[in-house]
Length: 187
Figure: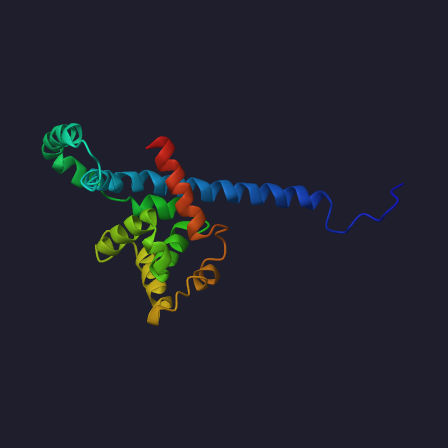
C-alpha cells in the first residue's frame, strides 16, 4: 500500500511516549512557575533599590516624591516584606519531579556568566545567603555545593550539572528567561 516501508519506531507506542513527554514538560514548567512566584517575592525590595540608580535622569523631582511615598509605605510594611521574602523549598521539591529547580541552582553556582545576569544574580545571591538556613532541604544545599565544586578554579563546568540532573530538559538560561518573562508579564 505504501511506496516505502514504515519505520519500526512509528506505531502505537509512539503516541504514548509523546503523551509522557508532554506531561513531563508541563510538570517542569509548573515547577518553574512555582519558583517564579517565590522569585517575585524576593525581587520586590530590589526594584526599590533600582530606582535609586536613575542618576542620569534630568528631572528627579517626580521620582523623589514617588520614592518618598514608597519609603513611607515600605517602612510600614517592612515586617511583612521580610516575612514574604522566603521560598517554600518543600513545595518546590515536592512538585519538582524532573529536578529542574535543582539543576538551575547547580548551574547558577557553577557559572559566573549566569551570576552576571540580573535575574541569575538575584536568585544566586538569595540562595547563597540562605543556604546555611535550617529550613533549606538537603537536596537544595547539595545542588548548590555541587555547582560550587564544578566551579573550582573558575573552570565554569556548569554542563556537569546536566549529567547530575539529566531529566530536566531546560538550561539555566532558558529557565531564567522564563522567570524574566513571568516577572515582566505577571509581576
